[in-house]
Image 1 (tube, rainbow, N blue to C red):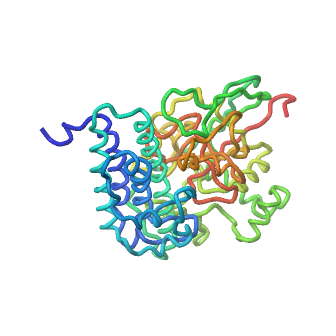
Image 2 (image 1 turned 30 degrees about the vertical axis):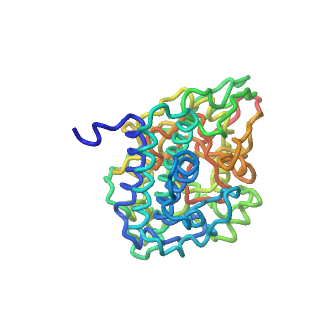
Image 3 (image 1 turned 135 degrees about the vertical axis):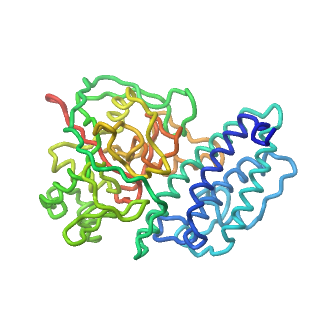
Length: 419
């Protein structure tokens, strides 16, 4: 029998997630993996090391007798934001860490994987350790998407516009007209129900009151965004929030991130390189400010996160998300889209704690709660979100000016005399 055939289900699940991270890094050179193109971007090798540091710090050091850290200095280099664990290297300077190199990061990952496998194969694994491992795996899946977001930004800054990897080319389709999904409003329950894994910010489940509303049955497309641009959308201050207009004037942006106009034709930089803009695909890499301005121009609005969840919970999650041959949002086979796995969709909801929310004790409690200020919630998952990492209650969050996430939008509107 092979080693794979001897693995326990827990080891198999663990190794599948860890292997995907390495598969995502495989097309990249050592130079690619070291670059940091802006303060919000982290180098690929940093993502690989940080996800490993998480398992080492929260699982192995406190729970595996006799475990010795691979390198004590890595605690300073690869801690992200856990203040309770001591000082850490400044985030904007992660691109200056030329050493350790990618080979040493690979050795670090192998060292930790061996130790975690030993722990997983032990009998009578305590439930709290199983929960920590599951948290670590979902944490690594988050960094898999971040790895793709970040390397896309890195490669877009290269004047040669190289692709991350070749992608299958799909012919443009004609998306059907938008249909509206009516919801009567009333008292609804939102939040996680303790049926499977969820991050702490997805609960507790609670009731909210909704006024009657309708939600578009697909995201906004590139072609619709071009109409907004052609109508002066980036030049009309009446469409923009004050902070958004100020940010727009400071940046000078006239189109979504990664769009370029060459000889009168628009192109879009994708993980496959620069491509002609496909008007049928969902628009992606727009900020909350841009999304809100588009919604005003459309005589609509963005949904609240509770409205989004109340509708999306009735739709299937399967079938979309991370596909290494796709890696871009695309129109479905009949010009359709689902609610999950193409673009993260901005909501008008500030990222705040649910009623009764309590962060976990200790350093692991810093995971989500301390970021609940100055950010907006996105829902739905994207073309870079790993399989099994999307659910109706998932609350992603970014600052309103962020564009480098795989973020788009879906419109909402009030019904009748609703607010």
